[in-house]
Length: 131
Image (cartoon, rainbow, N blue to C red; front, side, top):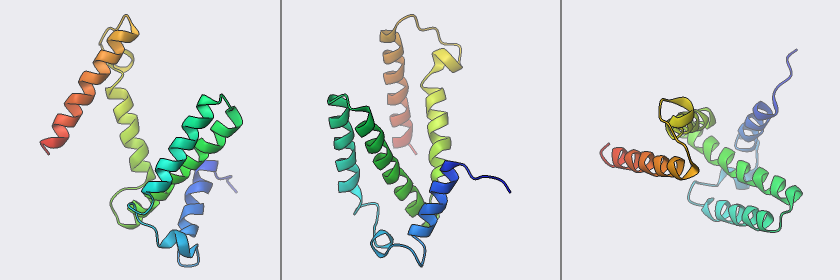
């Protein structure tokens, strides 16, 4: 019998939480109703970083991941996208925004890297507006 990865266990957990026998509160949530929690958890992570508290940072990153998983599972149920789509989009974005690593662009300083990143990000935003 194969052992499930922690990530697959987390995906299964969300399927249960939002399933018919899951948590009533969770099942009533929407992307909009979860906004305050995402903001709160992000703020708590920032506070942990500022305090240089690795244990608290780890916990708060878990809470942010909770939010990402929650939103992804809601979207999966709406047949919009799922966590695998989110990860795929992130991989593509990271490759696009690091042409000095994954492409032929030369960058000799972090200043050049940041400038390239900003330029690529702007082009992505313009392309989104046109679609």
